[in-house]
Amino acid sequence: MPKISIIIPCYFNEENIPFTSKELIENEKNFDSDMLFEYVMVDDGSKDQTYAALLKFKAQYPDKVTLVKLAGNVGSYNAILAGMHHATGDCNVILAADLQDPPEMIPKMVEYWKKGIKFVVANRENREEGLAQKLFSNTYHRLIKKYALKNVPPGGFDLVLFDKQLREDVIKINERNTNQIYLLSWLNYDFVNIPYTRRKREIGKSRWTLQKKIKLFIDSFVSFSFAPIRLISIVGLVLGIIAFSYGVFIIISRMLGDIQVAGWSAMMVTFLFVSAFQMMALGIIGEYVWRALDAARGRPNFVIDEVRKAE
Image 1 (spheres, rainbow, N blue to C red):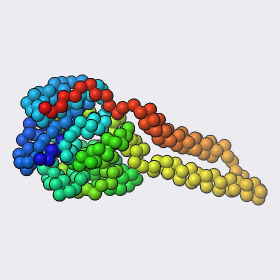
Image 2: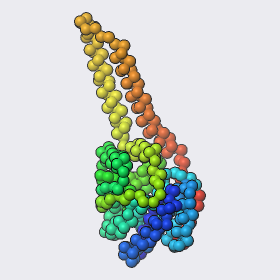
Image 3: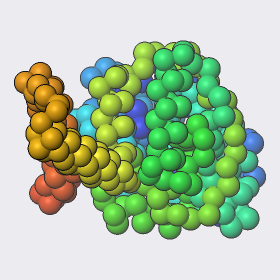
Image 4: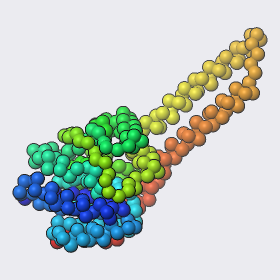
């Protein structure tokens, strides 16, 4: 009988867990009767009662629930990777604990997997969220699609189903400072895209801060694209051409003696502009170098405090 592992990273979700667990169990009736279920719940260093709520879910369904408690907060993508390490299903799903991504999409995704599709994406066609959140998300995914991963559908995705083969591929890569969900897309397997509308969060408060969004934005480009480095080269070349042209203009003007070139203000503006570009370029290169150093250290993406496997 095929088994599906549903991996759910949890961070300050004590209010969500009772509703999420109930909906997960109720959703089982939408699958074929031969399907086995495994819920891999990963507590990403929550400081509230999230783990206590997860223990209650585990007590209710000890044969279905695996709990992974991380020693500290490492971010949702590393928590997802920890869940992959402990998942045992023939196929796997990544699902948000706040139920913004509807679990009722999963049975339809499983049907494609049974037909041999190893990667199934639930694409956010729309979202019931504020203007600022929509703007950031749409801009992020548009840039990723244009400059990094061409096969990412417009609007992006978080809810995905993937075969155990892809799970093992991601575990083997064990990449740091990346988007594990988009790493699945980077593997370049053929996929099916199912559009849906992302729900508005009804319970609890999102911990998806601006700082985390900026880090994700930088991580995604450094992980999947050399566009920032290429941009530095292009801007540097353009500035070089402008500088050379201006130098030729000054030399010719001096030789002809008919044009006075007053240079202090122009020189200072040019100097400050070029200096700012150089500092920005060093910062971008530094992001790549730091991530290379971080990977070379070989430190783990997460540290596990406790695991309670499904019995």
